[in-house]
Image 1 (cartoon, rainbow, N blue to C red):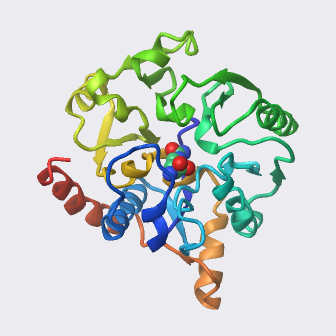
Image 2: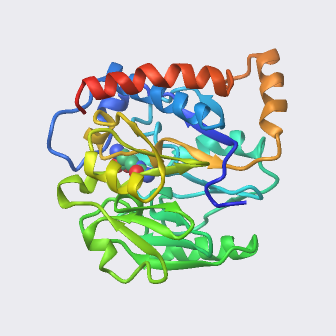
Length: 303
Ligand code: CIR
């Protein structure tokens, strides 16, 4: 199985407070309805790619909680509750604890330091942990210990200064290839990998997301689209200009893994009991129908 083969994902509906999400970006705050629309398009794209999606309820008290990738890390065999480096996001991992415990055979916890999921890049041979303003050495070392306990090797690397997360600047697009900014491509981090370097004016396109046989990229990046297509990849541009206003991209809106079918069982139970958190999964075909108009509208918007 490839590291980007997924059949399951968790996302969280944005709350209205998402407009107050953390941002280094000095531009305008996002508009709630537009964030919601981008989120719905993203969910449809995941379903169209063959993933069953669990949609958790919004958490108004945590403006950034739509970005579920940061407080946790998931693999087929285990999940890890992380300790996000931004104080306003620290308690988000606890909000995921029950959901993860219900779905994973083992749930581990980071106990010291800080680490954000956005700093963790899973490659075929090891897990890369980036040191950034959100992930410190203590957190990275603790995470290495946890990963070793479930048989995974890892390496700690430096994130370019001023970059929010490791995956802000790079993504794995196939088993041998990394989509990267010029800075990270020349850093020597990806020795042994082929790097596809995005042009400087499209540097925000590097937070791409490979899901099964398709690579999601940010809409409005024609040169990156061409670069990936020339490389033989199937690419789906998705609108993220609103969430980009709070420094986010495509990977941060989901936790993804290849599960053993547990979700379907949970879905039928949760539908019966109306337990908190709604579980999506109207099927791959329904997802495909929903995502196509959304993509057209992104192109019309000239995003
Ligand atoms: C934050 O600063 O934490 C959020 N506004 C954006 C998080 C983006 N996360 C990610 O790319 N993994």
